[in-house]
Image (cartoon, rainbow, N blue to C red; front, side, top):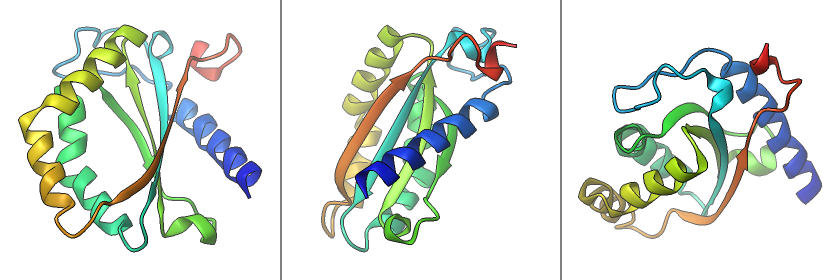
Length: 148
C-alpha cells in the first residue's frame, strides 16, 4: 500500500506542475513577477485521525490558506485521493515558495502567528485532527513543461 500511496503522490506532483505553468502572484510575495519555474514547491500530505478530515478541510478553507498567503506561501492546489482507502483521511496539497530560505521563514512566521494559534486551538477542541504530516520539497526538472 505504501508504494501505491507514493505513486499517487508523484502523480499529484506531476499534475501540480502542469497547474503551475503560469506566473504566480500574491499581494505579499516580493517575488510576484518571478516565473513559476524559479520557485520551490512543497508537496504536503496530511493523514487525519478517524473522522477528522472534514474538520481539517474547514480549517484550511477558513483559516490556513489565507495565513499561508499572509506568510509568503503560494497556494497551488489541494486534493483528496480518489483511492477509497485514503479518501476519508488524506489531504494532499502543494504550496510554493520563492526559495528554500523563504520556505523556512514562511513556516516559522506561520507557526508563530497568533491567528494560526487561535484557529488551531479551536479546531482541535474535540481532538487532534492530524495524525501524520509528510513534506517533500521539489524543483522543476530541466525537461519540465514549466521550463518551456
